[in-house]
Image (cartoon, rainbow, N blue to C red):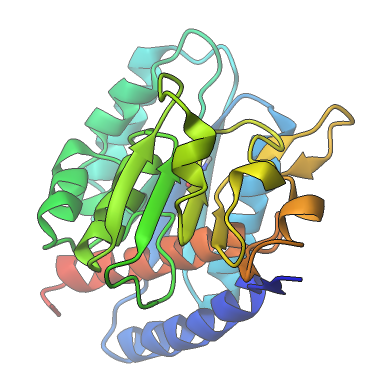
Length: 276
Ligand code: GUN
């Protein structure tokens, strides 16, 4: 039976440090502020945004919410982002994705200033992650672990999760394979993994027969099952019998994503105030 990696506990530890950093910044006259944009009324997005705002409050980051109706035009959304890019009180900008139909996630990612892109979604910030000189961590960043020489297999090649995750594993000396919907003999590849990262966005996609005995399984999925319940990309009940370590959903990577967002917002504030 696998040991469950408690993302909540790790993120609580990280948040303690972030809280201290915010206090130190306050003493230097710097209030850290994150602008959070939500468009439309998707319940899952609303939950994520509420969790992020609550986490900001807990560490002493001011969160400013901009809740726009689903029929907001692209021009209106871009005008708001432009305003926030130029607002000196705003250190980070987060626009919750995906946007409602008719609005472009890509245009929003392009519009947010890379200096305030605390999700690290922009081409510039992803590029920094690629070459290993990033200031902003990607949202799926995880605690340090010895990946040296290990077989790391990432299932999923999204710009937001799969690709940056693969780059981080590579920088930590893992031997990295990225699989996707066109990969032949997927099971054969995933069964090689010492570290298996699931980032496909399909509930229970990774089944026990795809996992090597003793593998470390990181589930980045935030899916809904047929009953509408939050679940991951991994069939946790079965895979946890084979893995050595596994992250649950919820309570695994999700809280780490929030901790990373907070850390990036503090980093942005420091950078914008000439403190790093
Ligand atoms: N939608 C799902 N995850 C994320 C995230 O980390 N950031 C943003 N902006 N939108 C998301």
